[in-house]
Structure formats: C-alpha cells, structure tokens
Length: 307
Ligand code: CP
Ligand code: NVA
Image 1: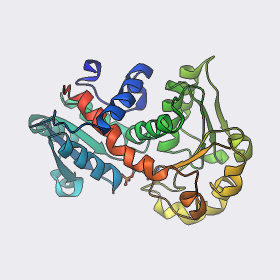
Image 2: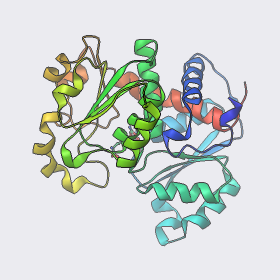
Image 3: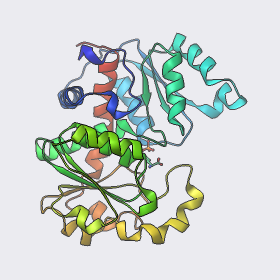
Image 4: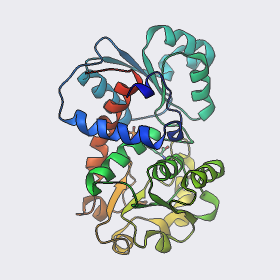
C-alpha cells in the first residue's frame, strides 16, 4: 500500500478504484490482526461539528494500532478566537503525523492540505463524507462478496452522503441511483464527475421517483433530511421528503436480497422507520462498526505503516 503514503483524502475521488479496492481488502485483513504498526504516531481530530462514530472510531483505531489521537474541538483551540487556518495548519504540521478534520466548507480542508506536509483526512464536510463511504463499501463487500455490478439507491437529501456515495459506487463498478426532491439534488459538479467515471460501464441516475429508483436495487441507503448546520430547516422539510422515507413498503420493491444502510445518526420515523432499522435486512450496526475497520486501513496506508 505504499502508493497511498503521505496522500490526503479530501474527496473519495482522490483515490483510484484499485486503491479503494486495496484499502477494503486491507480493512478485512486487519480485522483478525492484533498489531501495533503505528507506535509513536499521533492523529489529530480537529472537529467543528458534533460526532460520535467518526470521533470514537478514529480514537480507538489509533489506540489499537499502537498510536495515539488528540481529540480537538475547534472551540477549545485559537481558531475560535480567529487564528487563521493557514497558521493553525503550519503549527499542527509540526506536532502531528496525520490530521482528520470535520468542518463545513470543503475549502477549509483544501487550505489545511495546502499548508501541511502531513496527510489531511476529510472527516465530513458539507460536500463529502469519504470515510463513511469506505465503511459502506466494506459492508456491501462483506454482504455480497463483490461490489462489481451491484446497484445502490440513495433516498433523500442530495447531501454530503449522496455526493460521496455517487463517487464511491461509480469508482467500484456499481450502479448508483439518487432519489431526491427536485430542489435537493446532489452537487452538480460531483454528478458530472461521477458520470465521467461511470461512462459506458455503469448506470448513474438522479431521479425524483423513489419507486423507480429502488426497483431491483441491492442496497437501499438513506440519511437525515437536514444535516448538521441545517437544524432550523428540519421541520419544514418533513412533508417535502416524506415520499423518500426508507420504510418496509419501499424495501419490498427492491431486490429480495436487498440490505438497508444508514450512516447514522438517524431521525427514526422520519427518513427511516424503526421497523427497517430493526428488520432482518438491516446491516446498519455492522456498517457502523466498519467505520473503525475502514479507518484502520486508511490510517495505516496514509502513514505508510508496515507489519
Ligand atoms: N456517520 C457519522 O459520521 O457519524 P458521526 O456524526 O457520529 O461521526
Ligand atoms: N448528512 C449528515 C451526515 C452525518 C454523518 C450531516 O452532514 O449532518
């Protein structure tokens, strides 16, 4: 995995199909290994937004691989008092071996990457959530054996999850369908980029019709209707998004072997029903656990650790 050493992960499209495939296989391999190849390596977690899964899975991944992590909420750093990101990036570059950032603007990540020598990881921005999609692909690979030719349907808001799923599915030879209300489509530039990756090989569909989108699909996926930073819009969005709810009726229209995924946290009975979360087709807890395994492979690869 030397090829990923020293690289950044700001968008899932920063990695090639082959590099993602190798990462997923490494993640599976690491599940059965107790090894500490990252001894004395330190990960920083610089978060502007709340997090349970991403924060804890990165902390535990570093600990189990023999390294350490420093959990930094930006409110306790001088960023909150106006220190420029460029200065913060240069300073942290002198202490840390690798830095994961959760922020609003994708340009914050680009600023850090431009001012740092160490690898910068996008731990969620308003545009993308690549670490989550590595875990989602890992889960699909475990459930179906291979990713090639599978169809993933994402239902709901065309947000960071929709954007990274588009790229991730196309890169891995999967068909990808996004069903969302007209005014809530995924990022236009990412849809175009996805179509170029998929060109002539796999299907990329953005539609307003959830029923059309789930027909024959093997993976149904959803996320909240109002993301972090949009909380005040949540109530007004409920009637707009109701037809896209991942419920048992919609799941029945998919492939009979279909699985249900959600990145979590979920607003139960809004974008997904309790029955689907608890149902036999749900792989949501496996998916959450896989955050740590996918990130172990990512950390080891970006840091060039050998074992
Ligand atoms: N899925 C995800 O990123 O969860 P957290 O916001 O809890 O990190
Ligand atoms: N779209 C959600 C994902 C949370 C993991 C958000 O950005 O809040």
